[in-house]
Image 1: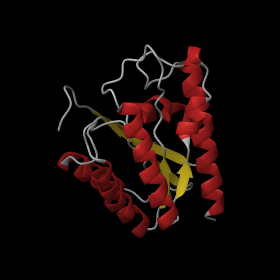
Image 2: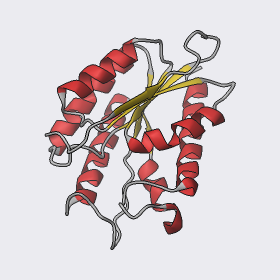
Image 3: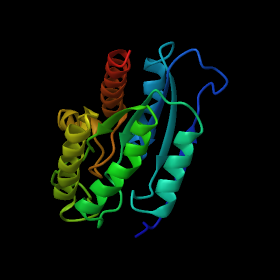
Image 4: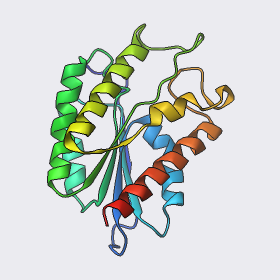
Length: 200
């Protein structure tokens, strides 16, 4: 099921250069918010591309888009953040699609980092669905189980998001102000560096 509005955004950095590892950030508006700061933190250490979209993981466009984008270059590492779209998507379907998509990336030789989704459950947040927080937690659990089974790395942004001060979170329960974005970018960049070095 599509949402009222759907969008796709991407950026590939220094595509003519191959002297550093190339990293791909895949995600949604959360990824879009921190991708620039992650790129700045990894300057001189890796080239960072990103693909962000609102399309849910079960849509035909999402799978085709992600698979095609990934195949267009050689990525040493993929940081995969998906869990905040497709609100009525069953957890089992989410887990199955996740396994299929990132499995192809791992088989191609890329290091895979799965990212738990960030969402804050507070009075006053305008959540799209009454049980949205429970849905996201169930998806995070399924993601963590897949990571453990397939030996993928985990970037637990959900736990980090709970530590972000209220003044750095927006009232919609999903997005972050400048301070929150910096905290997430710090965590993502550190996780990527750790896993790039671990793979060497």
